[in-house]
Length: 145
Image 1 (cartoon, rainbow, N blue to C red):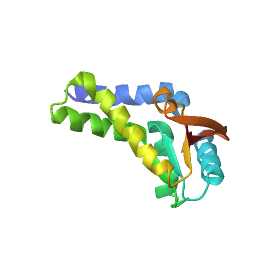
Image 2: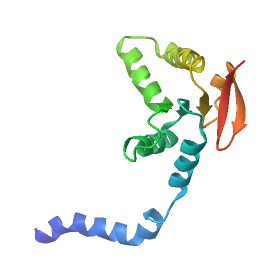
Image 3: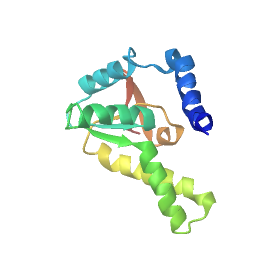
């Protein structure tokens, strides 16, 4: 009985031991370099549009490290997921949900671009229909077309 209980712990420890060199990120500084450059090169009071991984890194440095509280970091993935479930719960047809999310996202960005300098970390063809992507550092500066 003791052996059976110890087996899961043994497998976990064995898995960690064998894979540690692949998952150890303690020496990785790519995210810090990315966040540092984005935070230092964006205009004051601007908005950064980013998908999940990039947005979470920037949010960490803003919230936890206290850097650039003047920025709005728009996490597209969080917005899109929340909107998807909201529309699904309201009974909107699945075929139209994604188009409606795209439309709401473009409308939101269109409102902010009138007030703030806008940056996008990743290129998106949906946003490119409405906004011009101008390369600037690690990101793109968005401009109304």
